Amino acid sequence: GRDPPPVRALVLTRMGRPPPGFNPQGDNGIKLPPEAQRERDMGKALFSQGKWEEAAEAFSRAIVAAPGVHVLVTNRALCNQKLERWGEVERDAREAMSLNSSSVKAHYLLGKALLEGGKHKEAREALLKSLSLSSSPEFKSYRLSIEEALYMSRKCIWVKEQEEEEERKRKEE
View 1 (cartoon, rainbow, N blue to C red):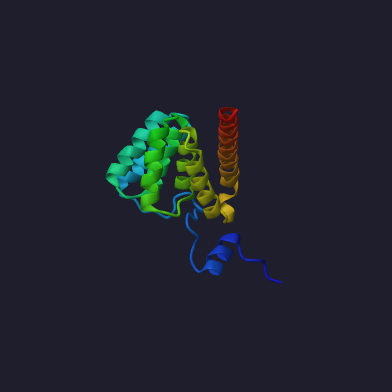
View 2 (view 1 turned 120 degrees about the horizontal axis):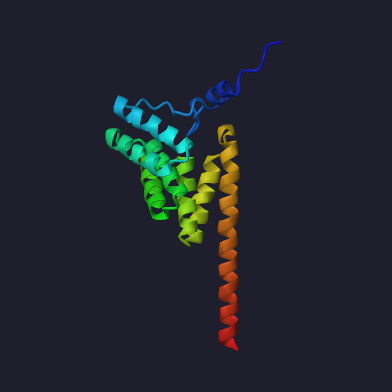
């Protein structure tokens, strides 16, 4: 018998085209201008060394060199997440979503930023969207992070509802 086709071939043939965010080589098939590619590569190297501030700056330069590329914006958002700059994470995530509404990372990062900002219901919606977009196998490792954040958003909503209910009962007494 024949060997089964590789997973990538199955995904491509079954769906006719790659699913949103399909990323077998880690570059999303994006051809960047040389300067943007250099800055992106530098940003990725700095990120892997834990130099998030410098990585964010490199991704910012890449964005200037190649505006409108959602992957560069989500990469900068990841740096800002590491730096706990939640307002900037939210801004970048929303920008990335405007460039690619099916970006799993953008929806996830928006959810994380909103969760950190206390906007739990809005966070839950962004995280649910991220989870629904992450059903293909290449997002398996990412799904655990999404599910953890989703759990936290639901827990925060529940706690707030319990506090509001207790407050309402106190006022009735």
